[in-house]
Each structure stands twice: as C-alpha cells, then as structure tokens.
Image (tube, rainbow, N blue to C red; front, side):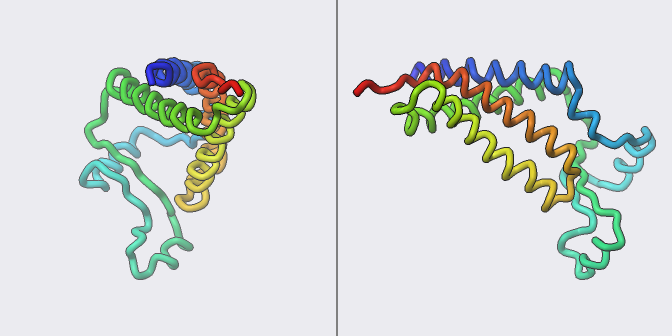
Length: 177
C-alpha cells in the first residue's frame, strides 16, 4: 500500500504541474472562452441571490421548451464573495488530483499486475479518456457548454491521465509467473 500512496502522490504532482503548464503557462483553454465586460459581474450579483448553480431557463418551468427555444440558455456558477484562488483552490486541486491518482492506482493494482509497463500506462490513459469523454462531452450535450471549451478540457484530462499512467505504472509491478 505504501508504494501505491507514494506512486499516487508522485502522479498527482505530475498532474498538478501539467495543469500549471496547460492552464497557467500556455493558456490554451482560455482561448475558447467568450469575453464579457466588468458590468456583467455586477448584474450577476444583482440577479442571483446566493452562491450556487443556476440553470436558465429553470428546468422545472412549465414552459421550459418554449423558453429553451427563445433563449438565452445558460448555466451560471456563482460565488458572490469570490475566493482565494492561489491558496485554497490550488491546495484543493492538488488533493483532488491525488485522490484521482490514488483511485487509478488502486484500479491498476487490481487489474494491471499481469500487464507489461506500456500496457499499464495505456490502461490508465484509457480509463482517463473514458471518464473525460463521459463528463466533458456530456456537459456539452446536456448542459449546453461550448464544444470548444469541453474539447480543450478533454485534451487536458486525456494527456494528464497518460502522464499519471507513466508514473503509476512504475509503482504497480508485473507479477512473475
């Protein structure tokens, strides 16, 4: 178990640095976002009474079909008071990545012991791609999020899973025999 915890920690570090490169240095995903003015933030604060997620039109509305066709259609995630991006978000993001990598390590430990290193890497990459496909493209279909934004996040997750696989596959050894 110590090997899996160490391996998942190192894989989470690789994932964390990949996120820094992809989102922080390259800024690739942000090229797919629309731009708005600062006045929109004031309107949002006035329009939404509490922190949370709001779907427009309201899915429980009796005339939802008509409202969907008329538009606008939006999902708004709002934190009215803001948050500390550099401390809380980064620490939470690392822990999230570590738990993800630990779950991948546990899965690989269950099924990957008869595989060669390259197949173990490929298996973890495929698991990540499957999860990203479901979540990212499902968000584009069901929640009307832009395909370009979701594709850029799919690419991040797919590549990040392959990187995690490169690390994790070193910590799950092939069984002899």
